[in-house]
Length: 105
Image 1 (cartoon, rainbow, N blue to C red):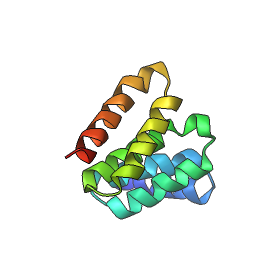
Image 2: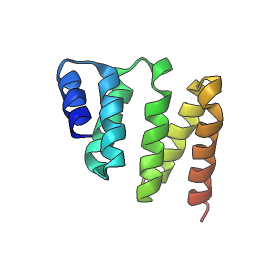
Image 3: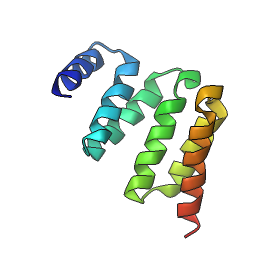
């Protein structure tokens, strides 16, 4: 994981937009939520909208995990579902349903 982190960080410095997503996923997995959130947000800004569904979904999941900004999490999950390809749609809908359930508690 350390090698992957270094490689993704180098790609981020080289302005590879997808690298923000990959680095965010790695940081999320390691529990470094503040840094993961920052890189998800950068990925969403840097990627074309049509390629940002996974970053939106994962940021929504991160916010759900924290139990904060659930309104934003719902909006992000809705956007992810709207932008999803067939392979990811069900997973993104699951995220959206989890966020909605958390908001209704």
